[in-house]
Every structure is written in C-alpha cells, then in structure tokens.
Amino acid sequence: MHADSPVKWGKVIDDRKCIGCHACTTACKMEHQVPLGVTRTYVKQVDVGVYPNVSRHFQVTRCNQCENPPCVEICPVSAMFQRQDGIVDFERDVCIGCKACMAACPYDAIYIDPQSHSAEKCNFCAHRIDQGLEPACVIVCPERALIVGDLNDPESEVSSLLAREKVDVRRPEKGTNPKVMYIEASQYTLVPGMAAVPETHAYSQQKEGYPREVNLLQQLLAESGMASSGVKGQAPGGSAAAAILAYDVPHRAPWDWRVSAYTWTKSLAAGFYLLAALLPGAGAWALQANFAAGVFLALTGLLLIADLKHPGRFLSLFRRPQWRSWLARGALIITGFGAVLGVDVISRLAGMPAIGSALRMAGVPLAVLTAVYTAFLFAQARGRDLWQNPALPLHLLTQAVMAGAAGLLLMGPLLPGGGAGTVTWVLAGAIALHLALVLSEILLPHPTRDAGRAARQMTAGAWRGVYWGAAGAHVAGALVTFAVAPWAGAALALAGLLAYEHAYVQAGQSVPQS
Image (cartoon, rainbow, N blue to C red; front, side, top):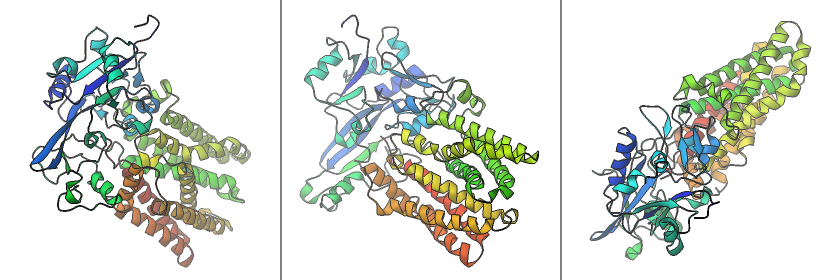
C-alpha cells in the first residue's frame, strides 16, 4: 500500500463457496446484540429449476457500503455518516427515527431497531476494524466465502480477487457504487423479484408490508413472447427454469398513512396562502385564508413529528441539520413559511394589513417551496423508482392549488362578493390538470421496470381501489362543483386528493429492494 493512499474498505463475497449455513447471520446477531425480528445480514435463498434438476442459490445480503450512499445524503441529522475509510456507519443516539434512510436505500438494508427505535444496519463491524480485527461474519465463515480488505492496497486479498475475477454488484444502475461485490452471483438472487414468492412455504418469510405481485421472471418471459407451460416461470421446452424464493426476511414499507396525510395538509396550507396572495380581490378574505393555512401547517408539523420513532429529538433538525437532506431543508422551509403566516395573521388582526401584503414577496416563494419540496425529498429516495419523476414538482404545486381552492369553497360564507366564482373556476381548472397527471401513470410509459411495477401496484394491484376512487372523486368533484354546489365538489376534490396521495406514497414503496 502506498503511504499516501487512504484506506478504503471493501468486501468480496464468493458465491462459489457459500453453503448457506447462516453462520454469518448468527455471528452478526451475537456481535451486535441484534434483536429478534430484524437482521443486519442474512442469506437469501432461491431454488432454481424443475424437479429433479433443481439447485439452490445463496446470497449473503447486507448493507452495500456504497461509495455514494443515499442514506447519508437524505439523513437530516447526520445519524447516518460515511467515515474516511468508506465505511457507512450510524449513531443510534442521534437518529430521530424519520425512516428517510430506509426509503432511500435501494437495497432494503436498513431497519428500525425495536429496542433502540433508531435506524441500524451492517456497519462493517467498524469497532473491530478499528482494532485491527476482521468483521464477525468474516471470521466465522467456515468456507471463507467472505473476504474483506483495503481496496487501495494492490497487495490485499480483496484487490487480488478483483484483479483476476469478474464480480457483480447489486443494482449498479442506482449509481451508488457498492463496495460489497459478488463472485459468480446468481441473477435470481441479485435482481429483486426474479424469484416467485410461494403462497405457502415452511421455510419462507413474506416481506411484510410489500403486497404480493407477479413474479418478475414471469413478466420477463411474457415480454419476450414466451408463455408459461405448467410450471411457474418455465418457458416451453424448459428453456427457462422456475425460480422460487426459498428464504428471505421481512421488510416493511417505511412510510405509512402519516406521510400521505402530511403531503395533503401541507398542500392545503400552501394553497390557502397562494390563492389569498395572488387572486384579485382576495384581500377581503386573506385573514381567514391565512389563518386556515396556519392551522393546516401546524397539522403538517404534528404529523411529521408523530411519524418519528424519536419524536422528542425533532429539535435536532434545527440543532444539527445536514443540509444536503431535503428533510432538513423542508423543516427550514416550513418554519419560514410558518413565521410569515404568523406575522401576516397578527398584522391583519391588529388592523395593519399592509404588513401582511408586503410579506408576499417572501411568502409566495415559501408557500411554493412548502408545496413542492417533497418532490425533491422523494427524489433522494433513490430506490423508489416511481418517485423519480421530473414532473413531480408540477404534481405537488397543482395539488396545492386544488386543495387551496377546495378549502376556500368549503369556507364559502367567508368569501364576499364574487370571490367564490373565481375560486370555483380555479378549482375546476386544477382538478382537470391534476386528473390528467393522475391518469398519466397509466397513459405514459415509465422509464424503469421497477417504476412500472410500482405504477401497476397503484393502478391495477394492491392500491387500485384507492387510486380509482381518487380518479372518480376528481371527475365527480368537477361535475358536482357546477351542477350541484361548489362546496360539495370541493369536498369530493379534497377526498380524492387524499386518496391519491395515499395510493402514490404506498405504491412507491411496494416494490421490494432486495
């Protein structure tokens, strides 16, 4: 090793040697006192073939120690961090339990520890590395299938293996540059969804929170024109072997209804303010609109805090923010917007509306950012392909306008003069645009296979009832607004928006990452 070269740790897993004994899993649990129900490392197993020609494929599965780790970038308080030697480590006493790192990880490698309530994962046994020892999983492997070493040292065993062997990494298309590499890896284990999940199996564990979907191998065969003939995943003549998931571990979708609800409440908060600030003649009801915006912004904050596993640590977002994270940036944006709303409401109550009007120069950009920043947060969740949508900021801004208009129509008695008529047309236009964006998930192609799989979960799979209910509420809302009563159409629009938000957030997490 050159004296001026920093150490860069990497791991090679030789699948030619792995016998699936689970010794690495057990050693890891013992070394780190990992509780039951969660794992830092495990051996995924897939059975490939048709009896009597069947083989079992193993994959030691854990954190990939990425060179460009999405979990570090999205963590708002630097609880996930990357050391100088490349090891991605964590601080459980700093973690606020926002689960953003879990959403960002393209490998399902992070879990919430049921005892510490913090995000944890394989950290390369950094405490052992610092003492000159190898990780616990390496020293216990009976076949020496796990090899660690300095990637910057050309004389290390890892470097020697990489020089003479072809290696694969998991999900290279994500651009994370993993430092866990596999020799002679099986595509059936490397690619999530390549193996069918059996309905019942004595030695399989379903991925809790991930709805059952069509086997990706079946889908690949269908797309290539080969149909199944009796055996799941087998092409005519046995040209493609059936692949059955024999062993896996549960992975829950990290974000639940509270995240869906928070996107809805902040749409209302931003929408109320934007319409009061930008519509002509809105000064007569700006106080009521901005007060409502403040109420929904407060609900947004409460939902965000309620979703934390460590709600008592939420002030860490301001005490030690990590500014690459759009969660940290979003907290600052919401706080700034809340300050503008507070001053605006107080000034109008005090009979000084000119102050509130002057604040529009800051309030309008902050309201727009409040509406759309989640698009950039979702984009940092690199493993969730459905959310990697460049049009998502437009989706969210349209949702804010629609929610604000619907909310104002429900406050109808507070809109004097012709204000209600203007807001009615704004609502109708926003519904039409958002309905087109909603249906684009069906009408437009998706750039990646996983984005398409997630979209199908939304439109034809586990969330289809919620999705089509949202679309129906959009159509009914537009019709009822003019044919019956604006307030009824507004109620339908808000219900449809909440339903769509939930379908979109949950479907985006429906495709397993490991």
